[in-house]
Length: 241
Image (cartoon, rainbow, N blue to C red; front, side, top):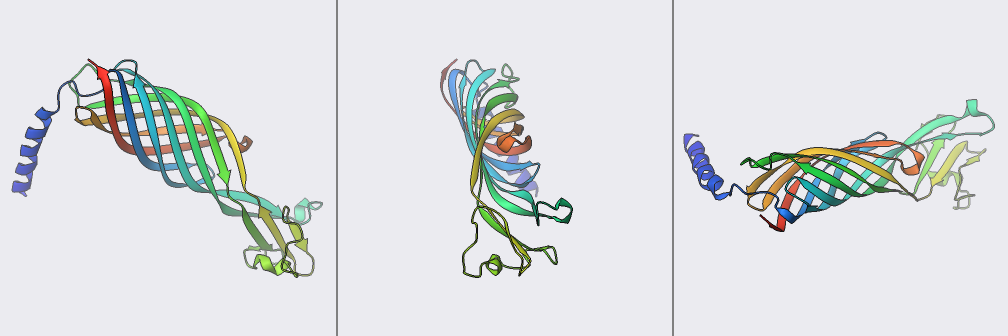
């Protein structure tokens, strides 16, 4: 144990002085970042995400950035089965539907402690852009007698092997089964983001970047809130002192 601690101490003593005091962003430099993380939001399941970020430093403190994020998840879809003319007799059901989110943002990042010798520099960011939400198509069946979702197969209401109407829910009186097909749908909405985090430089132009970001958008005319926790690596290219 002591030997391991000694090795780590020696390694730190060797590596740390090798990182120049000027490590970090330079004026008119470019920052390229790749990151992965986890996103979680209302009505969607938590799952992994990934993205790319490109930034231009107006100064070591201020960056203009463009970012791309992708998030694969499932969304809870709710509907009602039964005769629409008798709402009180309808049965509410829900299921998980595969959904993809793609985010495109342009924003500003403010970096702090840039005039110090700190190797870890905190930042805050704000962005505006668009989101593309894609919902996969799916089929859903429910037994109206037992009210159990997926207690029967969708083939139970296709005497001839084909749906009566592939674009809407139908009832089969003889079997008391409701069938619904959700077609693939896609919508674009407005996106607003706020973030905070830090960059820890382990070389003059290479840093680990980690943080949290809040995303708000309105795809499918629904206000949606998502939180993203991410970690990645940033490379500094060009610039002048």
